[in-house]
Image (cartoon, rainbow, N blue to C red; front, side):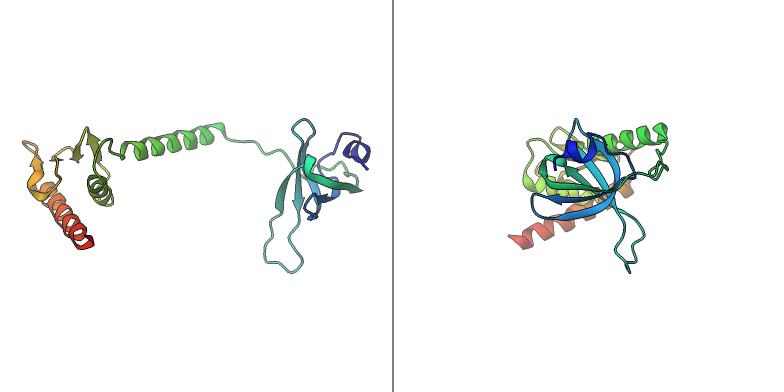
Length: 184
C-alpha cells in the first residue's frame, strides 16, 4: 500500500502508525508531525515497558525511505501534541549569546602565528578571559603585551598597568615554555 493510499495524503497528529524502513527497522508510535511536501514524518514512540525513561523518543523519518506504513488507529481528535508557545526574546538571546561565543572563539585564533604562540595564548586563556590578539602580539587584560618570540623576556607592562598582572602572566609563560621544552 502506498503512502497516499494508506493516509489519503494526510496523517493527523495523534494517529497511531507502524512504519517499516528500507533497512527493515520497525517504528511504532503516534504521529507528532507530518509534512508530505518535505516527505517528513515525526513519530513519537513511548518508552519501553519497565524503562525508567518517562519521555517519548522521537524519530524523524524520510517517508521516501519507508517500505511500509500502516495506520493502526486514527487520531481521536484530542490535542496530544499541543503547540507550545515560544518565548522569542529567550530564543533571540540564545542566538546572540551563541554568536558572541563563536566570535570570541574566532578572535582567539592568531593569524600567521606559530603553533607555540597559539599554544601559549590558549594556556593563558584558561585563566584570563580578557585576552586577545593584536596582529602577532598577545594582549592580556589591557596591561601586558607579549611579543615574538613569546618568552618571559618578551613581556611588556603598559605604563600604569598592574604589576600583579605582569607577574601572573610571566608565571604562565615560564610554565608553558618549560613544558614545551620537555616535549621536545
